[in-house]
Image (cartoon, rainbow, N blue to C red; front, side, top):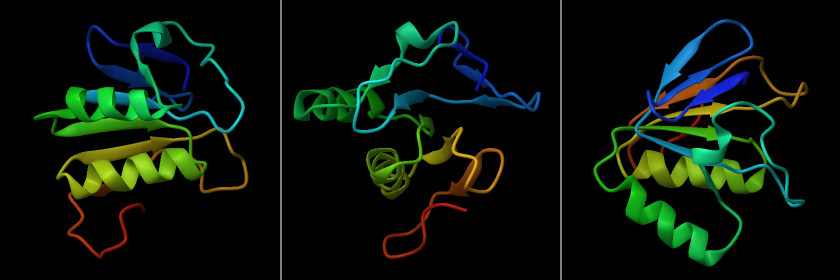
Amino acid sequence: MTTLDTGARRAHLDDGTTVGYDCCVLATGSAPVRLPVPGAEGALYLRTLADARVLCDRVGQARSVVVVGSGFIGCEAAVSMALRGCDVTVCSNDRGRRPGPQRRRRSPPGRRALG
């Protein structure tokens, strides 16, 4: 991700793709990492139970969510949002995974939630 535009609710990826969202979750791993892109200050960092509660409140009626981070917490957040009926895009800079955002639309319970 190169830029996060929280006002327009768009994530701009390094391949030139722009992904729209209703809610953005930053799940950067076990060590606190701040996303070093413009606009990240308006996103929710998922680190604590209190953060999780805020996330649930913010998601509310959201239809689309961008999760930045594909570690355990990011993937759990993505699955949780997919099970709530959201379109989920997971962005990662982990070069060991498939390149680009991974998407799965409104996965029914018990089905694989990410591409």
